[in-house]
Each structure stands twice: as C-alpha cells, then as structure tokens.
Length: 253
Image 1 (spheres, rainbow, N blue to C red):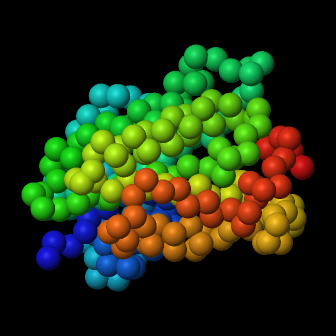
Image 2 (image 1 turned 135 degrees about the vertical axis):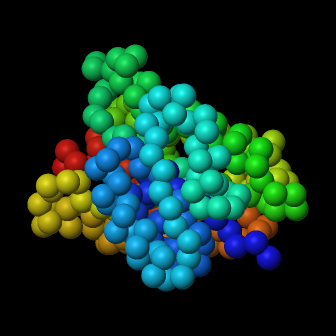
C-alpha cells in the first residue's frame, strides 16, 4: 500500500508547522511549502524532526501571490519527495487588517491569490497526477469567524469564504477521486510579539472557558485524513467561540 504523501502550504510557520510535524509524526510523508528564504530556515528544523520520526520530508518554495509560481507546485513537490502527492492541506494565509473603508484591489488580491486561487490550482494539479485507484485528500484551513462574521480583516475573510465555497463544490464535483474537508479554527496561537497574559485572557473567552490549542487542530486534521467516508465537512475547532460572536476581531478586546 502506498504511503500517503501530503503537501502542506504555509507549512514552515505557526499552525502550518504544527500540522506538518503532527502529520509527519503520524507517518505521513510531508512536503512543506514556504514562501521565501526565511521560511527555508524554519522548514529545515521541521524536516529534520519528521525524518527522525521515520517519514520522508522535503520542502519547496513558491510565492502564492504569483500565479506562475503555483502552476508546477505539485509536480515539484512530487519530484522533491520521489513519489506522487496524495494529499493537500491548504494552510497558507496572509492576515493583514483592513475593512470596508480601507480595502483596495491590491490588498484583496494579496489575500485572494494565496488563500483561494492557489488551493483551486493545486487541487487541479493533485488530481492530474493522482495514481489510479487512490482517493486524494484535501483539507482547507478556514476560520471560525466565517460563522460569526464582522468587518475586520475584510480581504482575508472574503478569501476564506471563497475557499469554503471551493471545498464544498469540489467535495461533490471531484468525488470519488478526492475527499475535500475543512477545519475552522478559533483563536489558537498568539500574534507575534503579543503579551502572553493578554493572549491567555482572550484565548479563554469562549463558552468552554478555554481556547483551542494547536494540538486540537492537528487532531482534527488527522481524523479527516483517516476517515474515508467523510467529505464535504467543516470541523469548527473553536471551543464554541462562534456561539458568542464579537462585534470586532478579538484582538480589539
């Protein structure tokens, strides 16, 4: 039986890095996508740990705001790891603030291309090289705020809505060759430079009195990867945060 091989976009940092490590430790071969040389340094440490766990691991670079850089990503990933790609986790996402008064076409495209366009093109490439008899697996990383929208991070949120729609369409249109699911995390990791006490205060502002940890998100991903009868689903891993919606982004509180 062929060992499953996953391409994880944005896999060198934050939640993408946690997903790469967890899936590698679980025995999946991993290709980490990162954007630039800075990401390469972070990826190298993760690759070493995955290989130490007995899985194959490699990295590729691509700027997902450049459509030409996306076109051969799956082929490059397969070449780097030495076998076909059978799964895709779309985790890469810029997160720049804007609202209806500050939104621009340039900012919208800077979010829409990596968050929605790249996943669509990568799914097409995944299908094209998927071995006969293998069902590919796609997991899209969304955001709990799609169930409780507000006006902050407008470009980011619009792009995530597009990614959600893509997943629901492909779960039907690409079956049985692909299973397509999503995870919508809540407030999981502190922002760079954020005070720890401030993060914990906001992190626990949920109906459960605790926020999701990175391990909760990776557990959800492993469940979806291992569940052959599950497709078209979105798992909200947010400790119920969407049931106590805020008028603004949580960082304003």
